[in-house]
Length: 265
Image (cartoon, rainbow, N blue to C red; front, side, top):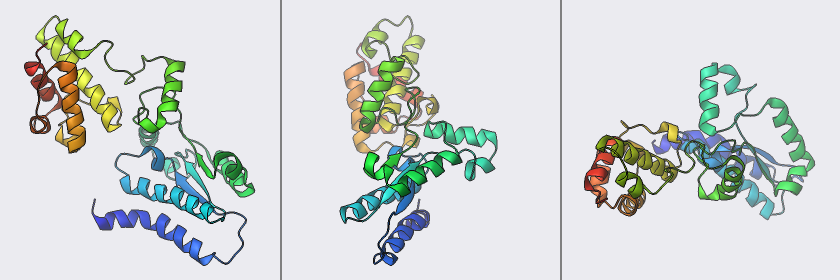
């Protein structure tokens, strides 16, 4: 993404909110409502600029409140029956909803939230920011194990158990599973599964998006994440894999094979 691309996406929300703030500075407003997005809270792969614009709206409404001015943000999830989702085919609708990890909402719910923002109910009950769509019907949403959602995650884990897809990884320590594997092929499969779960957790992506053929480079690991993965490999598989070796290993399955070959289990 170029700087021009980034600015083109954020301009309407950032410049628009600031211009309204400036133009209306001398008017005693009863309400000032920003339609933000849950993407600014959970992130959204492929839409970093859009997520950033909504983070700005949430922060800017807090700034207004700090000045004693009205400011409410509503972080909407995907709306099913109007706008973009209503105009695309069902396959695209399902893809968007799955990516966010929610069933979405409808227009009536949006209007109800707007009414609550105008009357001040949101400011009284949610400190001026209302977030929609943080549902954990399963534990495999890409954002579920983000540390800031730990309370939601632990609550959902207690309600659903830890056996849902992507929830808890291997049922025993990796080194134990590798030691008890009946063949090299089984050990390789065990190693790959554990690696995929770990990477999904660290990168906050869905386990379903992991594939043996995906290259490590395509996941965009930075040096800190790479060090965390290296340390996890050393601890769990008793294998010494260097960061450079990890980043240049090729596919995830190839990395799993390197780990297995170096493992001293």
